[in-house]
Image: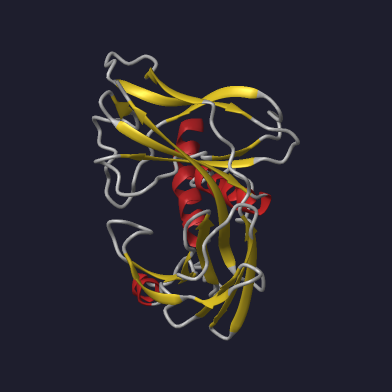
Length: 292
């Protein structure tokens, strides 16, 4: 009798549950479109600025691509002595080998210790941002080690020795460019770090070859490593605190993508008046390593 009761109960429960289904419609508010700033200046180089617009998550793809780049903005950069209105146009250097619309200035050149104010007038708003170029910190040395656990001793990681100067407050970002393979300097994941726990300490660290989402140069054979015979240029940059906070928060959100247990977070920005993104000053040190 108990078995019959169970069989009769299951269809009844199914009908009860299905009859309780109700279609729910959620009206999501339209997200405000904001100007997204990607700009940088390095000692000995001219500044560049890319301007795009944010887009709602559920917006049609065509709406996003058609309104991506802001090409009619007024962008002004000042070093405290010279003030220049930057010129917009297609640029092949920022995201080589693909052209993008960028604003550049030939009158402003980055200098170590300089402070640079950016003013952007677009979409009826005025945005401002400020950055500095810190004194570059020189790496003590570069070398390579084979990839741990690999049977292929031609696959290596690039290592560096750093003597962090006192006092506390040094912030860094690491780039590499493999000659003949990479079109531009690339930053791997976790490339931004500081001396919060290593102030005044000499220590070594390593980085793998970063992937380039535009050219897919990091092939399966390389597996995010460098090969013996490669020539690698390391670009080791000192950045100010606001720039570090921008990159660190951006990397944290990218690392947490798809993790349902990740805490909600937003990207830090040094752009005022509701803008997004970062205006970054680089104090860059370059060194070349021939992997033998």
